Length: 225
Image 1 (cartoon, rainbow, N blue to C red):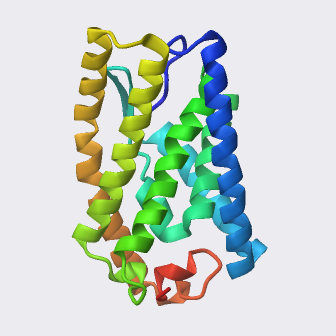
Image 2 (tube, helix red, strand yellow; image 1 turned 60 degrees about the vertical axis):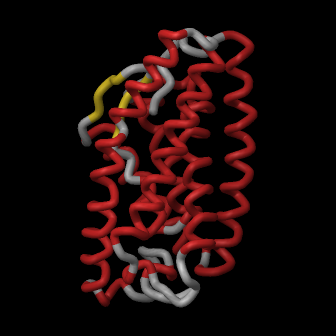
């Protein structure tokens, strides 16, 4: 999902800064709401966990270039289900920033675009979860179909944003569309893997009763809304 250096350049880079500021503002709103609900200590702790996990996802899990970008196993829906929307968003933003500062400084000019690509689909699945998951259902009780919807929505959003940034930078050339198609097709593997990870993680969480009421996880993991 990284936008490669040179794909978007010059004045066009400013759009990434604008969308990142908007995403950051919404993240701040979510963070305030979460702090009111479960306390600032829980928000901070879950955000630190999310940041460490995201950094590990980027640096340790397999990733490879395909078409116009790179395919990463980001596990955005997993972070959302276990930690909540605000900590997941903070973790995605900080994990990506740490990677750029210390391991991939050439990605920093594209940070605004890349963080938008990660955060806006997360906001989308948070809204989708509110609409499709019954208020009386805890996340640990979700089935494969439920998590598949969330994973598909998140990864679909990532693909859509990557396509937008590449078209914004390179225009509507045939080769650009071919690269986008290759990238999107490769992400089918991620869509296949992520729901299985979600189900497995939720199954483990369901058996770890000590986490119920813990500051380490979102309250919705074990409790109905």
